[in-house]
Amino acid sequence: MSKKNKAEEMEEMVSDAHTNDEMQENEGSVVEENNEGSVELTAEEQLQQDLAKEKDKFLRLFAEFENYKRRTSKERMELFKTAGQEVIVSLLPVMDDFERAMKELAKSDDKEMYKGVELINNKLNEVLKAKGLQVIEVKQGDHFDAEVHEAITQIPAPDKKLKGKIIDVIEKGFTLGDKIIRHPKVVVGN
Image 1 (cartoon, rainbow, N blue to C red):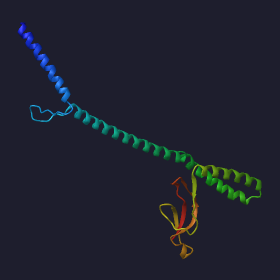
Image 2 (tube, rainbow, N blue to C red):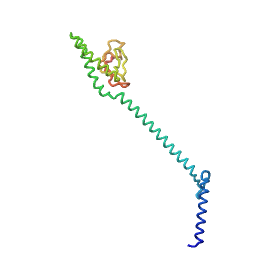
Image 3 (spheres, rainbow, N blue to C red):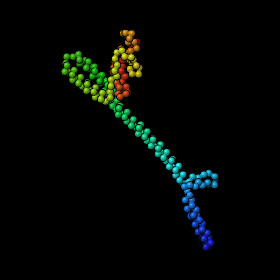
Image 4 (cartoon, one colour):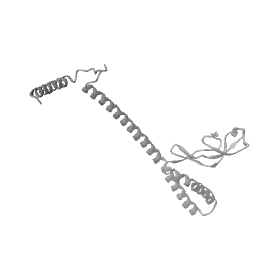
């Protein structure tokens, strides 16, 4: 290589360095046009757009996570409310048997046995009540509601006032929380 070529190369390198320095100084405020005529964003504007995109992604992800937490919390609360529902439903026939036993023991002369069974029955009822079990109160003369009551049969009403109303309750109904777990079985007058 000749000295002339080396001198030209050095001059070009110095010129390029000056051009780069000038571009860096003007980078925040100059928008350059490329040879196709479209506008290129400066580095600062590009960073601002990238930041806005990432911020939007973050906010969406955060909102999605908050919804997930709220949904799982709600599901967990519902699970706690009805966690023992299966066990409680299986104990309902035992409660019915206790009630029938109480009626039969009331007829006998052994009052001590009646008191003992009554204590056990009351304790079972109190424990289940503490877990959220409640009896659906139904009595003769109440209006029949197909969403709440289960009609076993219809019989001729002994009185015109009892037409379309409950005449007898065959089996008690129960709720656990706000949910009906067993509908009361009733006889309706027609």
